[in-house]
Length: 221
Image 1: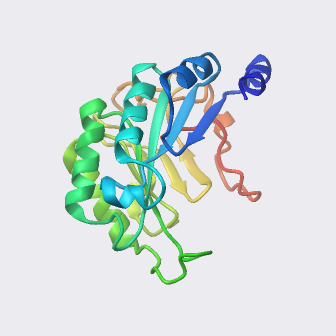
Image 2: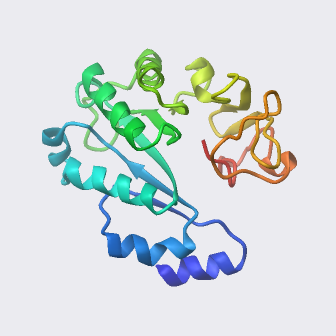
């Protein structure tokens, strides 16, 4: 795996790792020279629920801390499932845990849809995503996003400036109707620095419709 990242980096490609949150310090140190971003699925903030999925909450929380300590850009995703991990107290505890590490960590709450072995669980409603996003913001997270419900969650689909609340990146699913960040990653209205990995030129952000559904390359938050 490290060899693949090394080869990609030699071609000026940005490498990201998608993880379920089980990582050792040795593995992270081995991958760090080649990684620019790391995404961790934080599936629940209830250890008993987490163990039903084959892991422990403590291990995932530890990995989140270790990735952040190593200076790798980190984003967290929680698939919101009715009756499993959508209780407000649990979501608030999760958000406060992330804030305790850094309020700049983006938290993506995404909609579940029935499939495979979970066809008896209802699809996550847009109002549930919005409420989870509100809890994240109320807890102090600066960048909270609701996903898998294009056009249904209002401003929670976008990236906004933490200082002046200007909309910096408009999103609708994989499409970017607008991208307003400067090449240095600043808000064009107030000049605040927005943490993340950004394009040097707005034109590179592929603003407009992406018919092949690959999503915008190189854009985080």
